[in-house]
Length: 454
Image 1 (cartoon, rainbow, N blue to C red):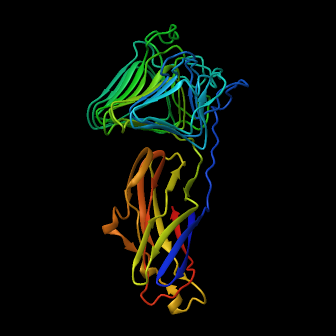
Image 2 (spheres, rainbow, N blue to C red; image 1 turned 180 degrees about the horizontal axis):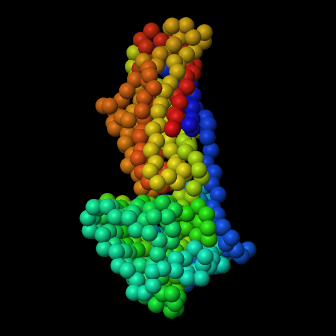
Image 3 (cartoon, rainbow, N blue to C red; image 1 turned 120 degrees about the vertical axis):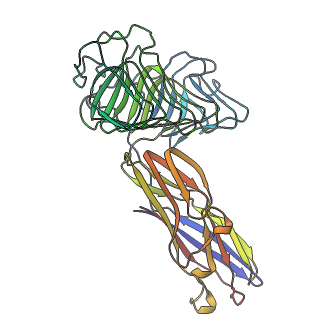
């Protein structure tokens, strides 16, 4: 369980009472980004959570609109005079990290209200962190069966389970297609359109029709497309040469990994590595991975199109702001104020993740805490309001959607609940309302509001 506490204080001189709120953090975020076991990384290899490798492309990072939200850093390798563009009332955010590259800051453009957070900074070009990763069919994790002609999987109804191997194509148009643990080499493409794809301990390897011969340089080989309400929930293997990697493309394969359409999602549950291919979210599609090392990145078609890169931390944590003022009110009146952003970060990397955030409070007292010097929790109310930001594949529900649904803090209350896949974060800005007793005395009132998540 993670917990944060709000300490509330007020200085009162009749006929008004002033309350200030001090929030103390009880948890911290940390993360480690690693490559697969045995991967050799050069001294200048990219260490960012999102590595955009193309050395010269215009708009190598292109958001028009949509949003890209990363825990950690973003590095765009392009030296183009416009290496990145954020267009529309949207943002590219690197929480706890930096945004940059050799073309920054001048080559990181915005238009129509677009923004970067934090501001881009000039950083040297980097190399591919997975450059030494063995590719199929040479890598020990690659399947060798069946022989050509490779089978085609076209799942259209009910439930079907398949095993690792080499496939010409795989599609799921309805029902549930389940992948047993292992590596799946696809030579022409993979389409999840209206159906569902589930897999634990899975790596999808996007090859070319010439397989087992590698892709020529450059060529559009096998793609991955999740569309029309398709839902892909995957997790990467934890051991072996492809540990931590959900998607790998042949280094010369320029085909994209795409999620498209409202209600469509890809929960990678691991890293994506497409050194020559694009990562795309369009028309409201959402995708999340623990790391992304790709040629280029694009979101488009809707502000709700989203790419989230959230490394595994193995923890569920909650963070709170430091201070907030409640304002003032006369005895018998009320005072209310937003406490600031509360964020639950789920870095456990679970295929199915759920949590509940609760809120509770103590009485607010001054002096000797006599009855006249106490504002009880029955005089304190709370409402969470809607989520102000969400990353990853998650459905989050407020405990109190608006002021009309506020609840007394005389007992513990549910602030937010969440159900999702893989890593995610949810942020809200709750409001506390205090009813000042008519017989309240002057003084500095102190109490504690506690947020917990489990």
